[in-house]
Amino acid sequence: MRQRLAALLALAAALALLVAPAASADPFDDVFADYQKDGKIDPCAHSPEELQQAKSDIPNDIEQYAPDFPAELDAAMEERARTNCDGSAPAPEGAPGATS
Image 1 (tube, one colour):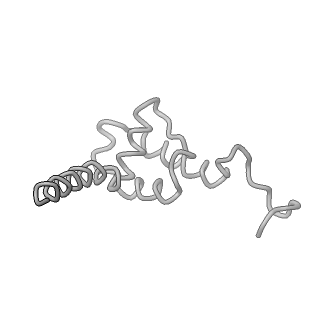
Image 2: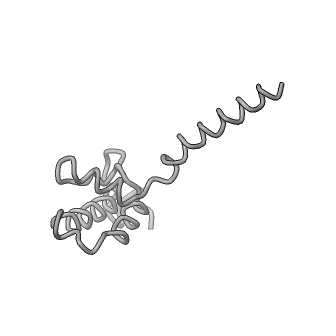
């Protein structure tokens, strides 16, 4: 019985180690990885909060290895604010169905 309990505890600890990195993903790393794929950031792949956090975490030396990243991040943030990310654009102000 003791061996079985020890084995279960070891298994639980191993699973916790596997899950921990995914739970603590860094928004900057995620957004920058997206940028590195093709030089663009998919605004719908990231929440507004993730994009804002990524902007806050831009390292000082970004100009040395990705000088266009800050501008692309700003563009993605603007695009994310303009779209619903479900394939439709938000209704213009004052249009029927628009919320104020």
